[in-house]
Image (tube, rainbow, N blue to C red; front, side):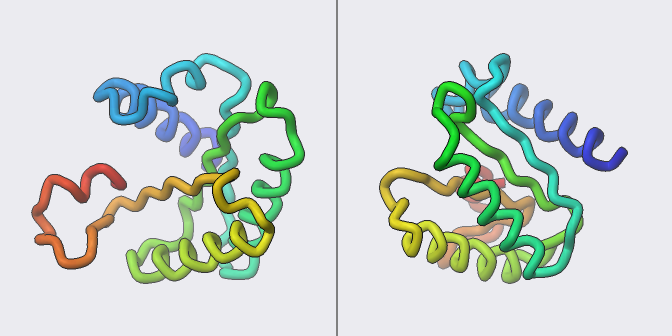
Length: 130
């Protein structure tokens, strides 16, 4: 039940915010197609989150782009603290590099409390990753 609700919220966010505000011109064709994969991971443990990430990284790399062009991996029950999210993101980037996929797979990450280092917490720029 949670997964279905979260996926519905993600699709609404994509439609209204990402595509609706034209933040990512590459997202529009994916919305109605089968090449967009949304995976909801209801786990909260660090080990399980990394396993989910590695599984999706493998799936994305080993599947034809016509079948899966983009994967959104969503953790609704984890990484609430921005610092935990950043730590997870850094390790995930290391996984991409260690797999030799730098330049092939691009991580785009979002967090509700996103803020760029050195910027005011009220800065409009932080909304690009929220």
